[in-house]
Length: 481
Ligand code: H79
Image (cartoon, rainbow, N blue to C red; front, side):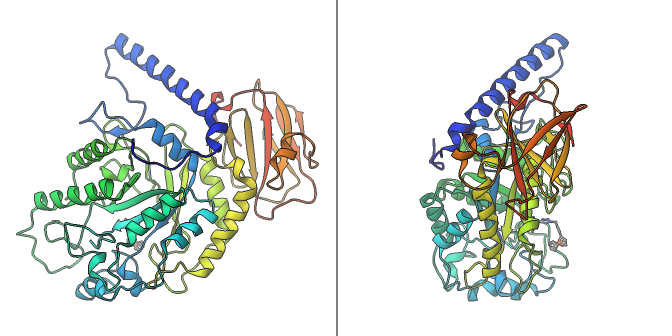
């Protein structure tokens, strides 16, 4: 087993959930097997993995659940294009002429880059994992690759910045992960050309490109110990379903507890990001882009959303407010997904101070409400516009995003409420020991639970009420709010 992040104390408190989920999965799997034996129909895979070519290569569930428990990660889109402030990959041959774009690396000299500082910013924001663009559609390798000269070692900075990021992550217990675009508009042997690029395609050979890609991905796994591979760019005709399944299998052979998103293969449909057929297509989880995914606790998913508009840095780009970011996180985890929030650092190597400010404020909210986020799952109520819900064991957490003093939710059949508290500060012991009720009450009236909150609410962004019950909430069918 390769090195992964150290287990935190949260691990202990979530073991109840994990065990029950595992048991549930085993029961479901047993039922499916019995059913398929009776009807002679093919076995339905209850989870993702290597696709139809690799029916026995299923998602590594322990790694998946550990990642799901993290709930919140940092996505970073960075490269020489930051010098221009235009979009990574897409502006090549659009806002920036091809030859200018492809020469930017010769001036890329981010002298203020400090990997420990980036990772501290992520950590302070309450993020538990980190995903860096090792190679985007523009083909530039942000790391020291043996297989190309178009990489960070041939820039004026001449330092393997991605290695520094990996080491900083390991130092600070943040799970290190990499983004890799299977599409490469720079590589001569990748057959599809971007826009009106003049290079002829006649001599291009996808077999050569494929070998290059496998070699590079191999480096990410063996040299950088990436824990998750975030593939992208699978939609062009040059990339096939067969290649996707082969790449998935290759990665898992190199590292069995690696997680791989669904863009490794062609099952990803539209920006809603989920997979058409989990048994047919490779990938461990769905990837809605620039949107909050729909409630789904059958197939794991992660929304990737930018903190500004652009993925890569743009001067004076419109920045989302702390409130919008926190509400996005709450609605995502309420739908049982992870949130991968993207920042695009500046060409000098720093993350923009105003973005750092928002990230810090998100972290401040999370420090108080951490129990309602990490190690939880979405449900048993599906998210609405103003309230979303997470649960862990026998407790559920109502995240209330308006400032109302009363909320009404359908009661859960057969579930008894034992205790209701408002998360006010990080002093969870006082709350747990029932020394404070903070003026929250819950009353049952005709199949509804009416929850009243005190006038003075702790947060102007979102307040969390914990409802402790007598029932394991993973057993409850999701209810609409
Ligand atoms: O890496 C990020 C995007 O570059 C990539 N996926 C995320 C994680 C991506 N691949 N495809 N798309 C995004 C969809 C394409 C969106 C576009 Fe556009 C709209 C391309 C051109 C217009 C977004 C806005 C990108 C450039 C401007």
